[in-house]
Length: 396
Ligand code: F0G
Image 1: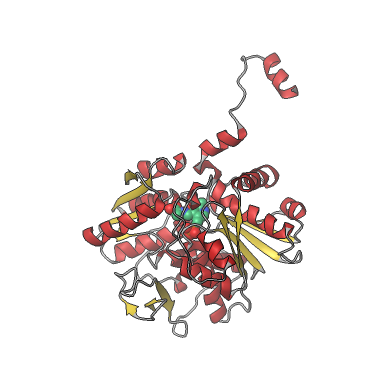
Image 2: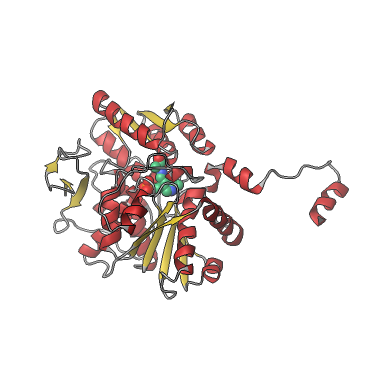
């Protein structure tokens, strides 16, 4: 059904490998002429596993009913930003509250298929929350490395409660990933970061779901951290295109935080490789990443589709988070709001045709990061337990 192929040298590997001897990333290449696609893009019964005929697993999936997230038309955003048609895909409504569940249902299923007894990852939070949840469902052990003090509380809470062994390291995400890759190699743990080629296979279903519901938009905008998701969504559209199911590709548009923007810098200089950022920093801790492992795939996605990369400041991110929450009723964490902040910036600069149909992918739920909310919105007012006191505050 598929081959696991190095994106740099084309060498093929078995399912146990994550990278090639040459250092290149591996990619699942489906044998598209052999595959019998057994779904129709009819907008019905949308879930990750509707698209099973394009997912490279052989056993029954470990599933918590992920996917099928709402794609909202955002009319107030359209007016505010000055673009004709904007949709927001709310990935925060997946079982663990982020898009990572799409990758984990496939990744943990693959772990079981390969007979693994334990999985591991480095994470800025959401990957660990999701992995812990699916490992719990599958009945295997989970080990998680986090940058200590830099992960939003809701995500740590999830990893802990779902029973993962959670280890904070005195370093950033890039350090954690380097260490966990080595530990997995030494200890035979199954690595479930997006360097694992089966993770993006689940995440590509975001593309399938968008195409299923509204066809191919002109542009897909999303936050970029380790750069797995933009690569995955691109791959999803590409497969539909190669199968002849769709006849156009959306412009892949990646948004990074100003303080953690190696992909943006590479794009600006039209490079196909990144120069890592030493000390990444941003309020959007989910994308506080200086050395994204999937950079090569992500840049290819952007260049191939005539897309762009852009940066936004922390202030712009929070403003977009508030806008989504207060005007559209869509509650997301800061990293997710980067997509909307980026769209607004590109539109303000005339870099987007106002007639475009655009999908912003918002990646994680508001509840993930309550501490930032309290910082930017303040604590609620507390008054005496009387009608008078309450009315006084209401009228003030
Ligand atoms: N948005 C959220 C909410 C995320 O958690 C992440 C990544 C991204 C966007 C960026 O996606 O890495 O595929 O480019 N979070 C990872 C984690 C790194 O460990 O949870 P990406």
